[in-house]
Structures are given as C-alpha cells and as structure tokens.
Image (tube, rainbow, N blue to C red; front, side, top):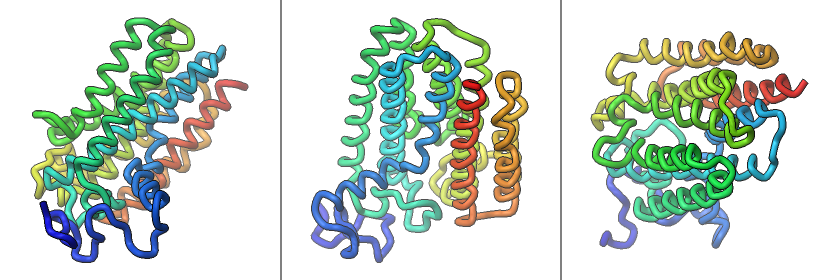
Length: 308
C-alpha cells in the first residue's frame, strides 16, 4: 500500500492523490460522477452512436425498443473499451505525465486501475444484458456479434497480445465500430443482410479510424517510448497524415451510392485533413474535436438523406 499523499508512477507532481479531485471540484457524489464521466470519454461516443443510427435508418421500418437496446449496448461496449484502455495503458507505461491528450483518470491519480477495470467489466455486463432482447429477435448471429465485440473490446488493450500495441487498432475499429455495428444494427431490424449496410459500415468505420489515427499521431513519441507499435510508430508520421486523409475523405464517394446528403459534410473533412497535416503534438487535440464533429455531421446527414 502506498502512503497517504503518494501518487502512482508516472503522475505529474501537481496531480491530485489517488481517488481525489482538486479542491475546486464539487464534493461528494458529484465529484465521483464527474470522474467517471471523464473516464467514459463522452466526446468520443460518436464512434458507437453513429453506426447504430446509420444501420437502423437503413432499415426504414424501425422497432424503437430494439434500436434503444442496440444503441445502449454499443455505447456501453465503447465505454468499457475506453475504461480498459485507460487502466491498462497506464499499467503498461503508455500514459505518463508527458501525455499530450485529454486527462486519463488512472494516470492522473483520480481512480485506481483496479476501480477502472471493475467499471469496465460492469459496462460489459450491461452491454450483454442489452443484448438479450437482440438475441431473442436476431438469433445466433447476434450471439456471435455480442461475444466477439466484448472480447475484442478487452483485447484492444488487454490480454497477452493487445491489438492496439501491435498495429491492429485500425482493423479493430473498422470492423467493430463500422462494419459490425452498422451491419448488426441493420440486421436486428430486418433479419436480413444488404450490401448498403456493408458500404455504410466501411464508411462510418473509416471515420472512427480517423479518430484513432489522430490520437496515435499525437501520441507517437510516448508510444515509441512504451513500445506501443501502432501503424504510425511503425511507418512514421507522414504515413499517419496520409492515413487520416484517406479515412476522412474516402467515406464520401463511397456513401454517395446510397445517399448524397452526407456530401455536405465534405468541407469539414477537408478542413480536418488540413488541420492534421499542419499540426503536431498537443495541437492535434483540435483536429480530434473536428474528427468527432465530422462523424456526427456525416451520421446525421446520412439519417436525413435516407429518410427523405
């Protein structure tokens, strides 16, 4: 046990002790709620919400209860993924006091790694419970989707071969926050498969990969130091900028086969590419916000375009 006032390895000297927030934060339950909200990374949740609304909209005939179960299941899987990443990146040494991105609660000493992991498993349990009505409706394909999604969410940072540490993060995001999330949301509404769901899944997944690539470009220095071999660590920062450009722009010509309205978000994609190309280090946090806005704009325009 560490002594009172001690901090976890890698925390900044001015970080609050484990489990505590600065004095200007609200006391009591609101203090802990604010920490858990921070740990959930709400600004990134477009990656789970957008594919569900896109896949559901494609179905046209919508069962709203099934939609809500699918939405909450996807969101809790992403929050669980974020929490596992928060706890295990710190334990593996990828999150240190030199971190350039948003605060991570384990590294900052706001929660222990064990508490964050318990939160992650709770999120996975909630996601599994949300999946029960989906399984009743959709049968064994939904069982496979649910089990593989939760296992992959943990394996992204955890397990003997963490995907994010071996350059497989982009594949994970494209498949599970794109193809499977959109395709599964469509299937559970229609009990059928459609090539449009595949195209939309790839398009939405690429936008989620852009978010990941910006994170990896920003953190390339600390990732090298902690032996986290992302694609950008392996192939360099110029590769990373081309990766971001490809993921931000390719969805637009792809989705035009289904609906043209998301093309109105293309200028934001161009601005994002310029931002990623000209920025480095902490400046990339601004690009990260743009990537989240791009995904929301793309998803909302897709929904409108599919319904008119």
